[in-house]
Image 1 (cartoon, helix red, strand yellow):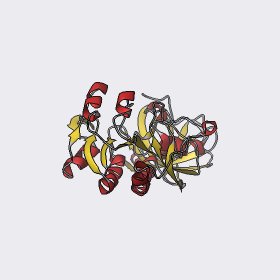
Image 2 (tube, one colour):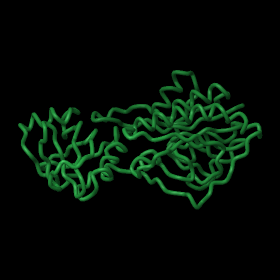
Image 3 (tube, rainbow, N blue to C red):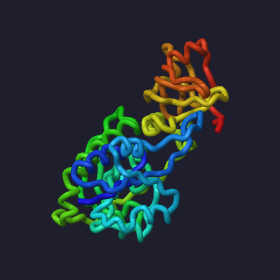
Image 4 (cartoon, rainbow, N blue to C red):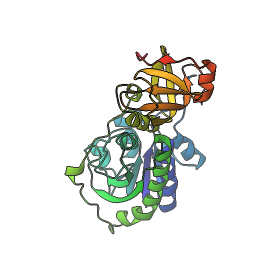
Length: 306
């Protein structure tokens, strides 16, 4: 079976490894190198690094035309897509014998879009999973080849859940791709009535809302960890909140007080104890260490500094 692989972040690497066990990977397609981190050094995507280590042919098209040229004419049986980050044009979707299979980190049709893991946590879902979907011209609307369900734990973050789903997706891919490509597994249409959207999220979406419920804001802390990090503004300084515990300690909405040596922020409903924080321009630290550095001084939460 001759295949192409399209993916970019670290979460795609397990599926590339799985594909190598069941197919001949003719080309790996990933996004172009780009500046990363504070120093803005140009870095290569994790999928490129893995592909180079494994001796695979890598292409990094910068446009839709370049993507088409990289795939069309290769006489591929199938292509596997995991978080590639670009919409595929109709001519590209016709470049394989049986189609493009997407490893999507949700139980479709729930959470169609680029941020399914974050939305599942934000919404308080008890379960999620991975779906193998045959890509069509819609956004995650194609028929589902197979799916695997898993529970979301109370302490799971966007990063930890993504990593777990990446591994589950790789296993599922290895179990069913060969049967699908050989016509022994038929995909089933999605039920539109259950569809929900998971649009992309920005750093501004990660701003904690003191006018909201602490339990919902605690989910936001988990969903946005490690990137971009939920945040608030305390005494005019932007502070990332990397871990927090919801409760009802009795701190006024919009205030931050030190209670038993740790910072506690008041919301319209409940409180958040800040267990781990990262003040702007500083390294991450425990909430108690930050409170000690403030000499126990209370603070005012907001207005937000963008």
